[in-house]
Image 1 (cartoon, helix red, strand yellow):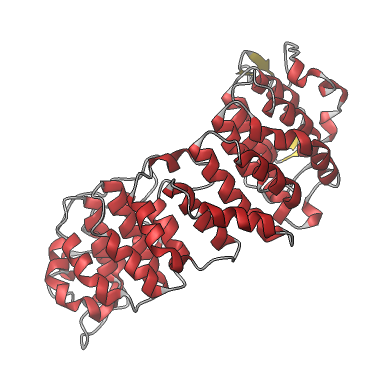
Image 2 (image 1 turned 90 degrees about the vertical axis):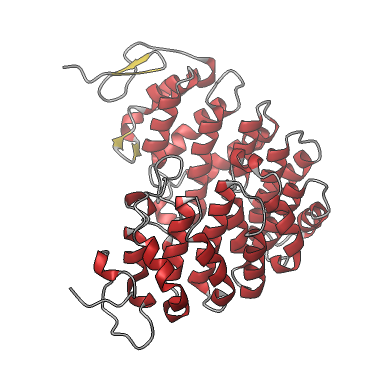
Length: 422
């Protein structure tokens, strides 16, 4: 049986070499002059890289994914194949005729990020010079005709040498027509200023954005200034609340942020439990769309991971969520109350009723479980009943009771929340 594959109409043999020569201007010059068999990527010989580059040039997104897998995979090193492939990746990323350009930019950004963080012995000795040679074209991605590519370019720019990248972003920001791209450019500056001593113009630009009529741009500026250590996010609490209570749908297109805007922003306040508690409690009275309400619960769980002091103010809210129509919210409320120990004792009966709830919390898009740690990392794998009881562990047993070493998810762990070891 043949093990040949096809990417974008380009037939590859078992080693990934092109069976039928395909020359495209974007990757043709010099591609076959390199002895790829002597270069290495995550799976050994780089003989398959020319075929994958050609298929990517032909518009095959699967080939781009395979380039990411072979050259980057899970990170940790930058191999010789990545250095040799970089000029061709850049040609693809900057050619308007190539369709999957944003994905190609993502591959370059991932490699550049590894080069910034990994030990020097794991970085191919030619990578830095190759990256420096491509800097003008890499920064030109910020002016691409496609907004998605420009957003990917913002994520790439934050991994490039800081002074050049900041200058390019500041120049582009003054004429960028796309709202979400403007947000990403601001976020990129926040990361870049941590890597340079010359921060004056960048910090001034970010500070100006706090007064923007676009509240999401102002929100991005708070994130950027906080990353740069130039602002106390708690001082901007009113701005944060207005922004995360507004139209946050655009963040789903961001290359640098997350659609879970409430919890992402809440992390800015985790060092200040009073500000964080005020932020979350006010949001419980805010917009009623399900995703945002669940994200408020996620943020509350992350705060309770860091601090116990806000719990008394949150108890009535958590208790009210135990009977909420949203299964994910009922799950999170039971999970969090189960971790608060004796403070949750007044709600033992309500928690017991929750332990009889057979509804499975819906997974996030893509099938991933909701949240992390106290906010419900096992939500996708059971019912509302099983996991709050199990995850609550012995902490919810009322004071004075014998606390078990485990809290088995069985009917005996109901009503009084007094359990014995089994």
